[in-house]
Length: 276
Image (cartoon, rainbow, N blue to C red; front, side):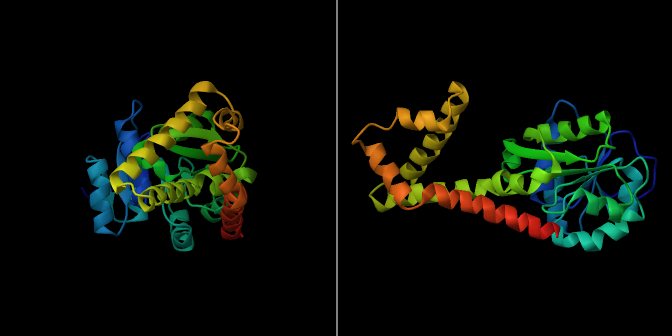
């Protein structure tokens, strides 16, 4: 739907600048959650992305200018890539008013930079991850102290509809990005390696996938259900001279733990570079 006539925004009307995968995930969770917002609006020049967004939120209305979006919405989600910020922020700044709450999910763009370019302190920075697409996401939230409890609750409701949420200090955001923001890709790589090893040693693709996915789901569930540390649980299943010890030794010899830690460090460093 198209809607560009200016109106006073309702208290919780929600607007997305960008209608890509993460915006689609967030709006899907929001509209199916218990605490629904007011109306949903979005702005994206890509017709394909717009179509997909509307599949997740059929009642969403498409705007064709920042002015129209800002006139309708109190809460504005910046769901665009960091590279697009220099083009979008100066234009959005002309539309931001005192009542607007800005939520940014762009990696590496610090709050002070958003505030200085938008001319408002009502800014929240979020690092979600792709499992939000299946309502199993992990989102970290940092915010300016000016953001009041009502606005913070609105943000937590939006993100809580697609997974877990943690409040963090912004100084931690680069590490959060390296760990949970980029983390699903590390897990996908591990899944891929486990499946490939099964196939290379005689299993069908289907069986290798079934064994791999259920093993990972079961391991996570065991950590959550028992409350025990991963270290303790690992020791519990590692018998002297057994198969698990042989596998773990091979991982250690290959530098598995160091590789994972280096991946988090590299992704965190890249997040810091984006904010420079």
